[in-house]
Length: 196
Image (cartoon, rainbow, N blue to C red):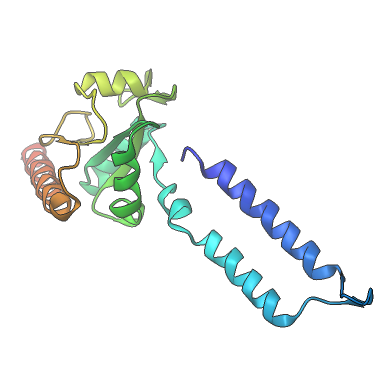
């Protein structure tokens, strides 16, 4: 969510200027006032719509890890792992994963996706209700490289081996699905053990 407020603010400012342009009258070469053409306004509205639906905004819909106690309850109730997407501002591969892989993942009902930013200070409520921050959470899982994707259960324990880095986007889906499947199976077996 790093650049979302700035980008959204720029789009809103652009839209306001576009509406001002629409309401204004332009001066033609003879000095007479004339309204902008409907064709130019259609192009302008398409540009605004394109900006609003751009991948940068869709990608920024990944929620920061803020209240893991709440996420743990949802994880426990729905048998869904919590997936930490560990990022840093200076990491081009983090942005590549955000744009090409996790762009539509916040809507995936199989897991709870949360972002941990290593180079920003973000406080969070830990799984047990105590205060922590993103750096402490990353250290807990021995994560120092970005991007890293870690799968944890409602108790905060790792469910599978984290995915560190991006070798190739062609195989990333396979690695992610393998780790997700292993994590979901582990959660289900823990649920069965609790119910016996």
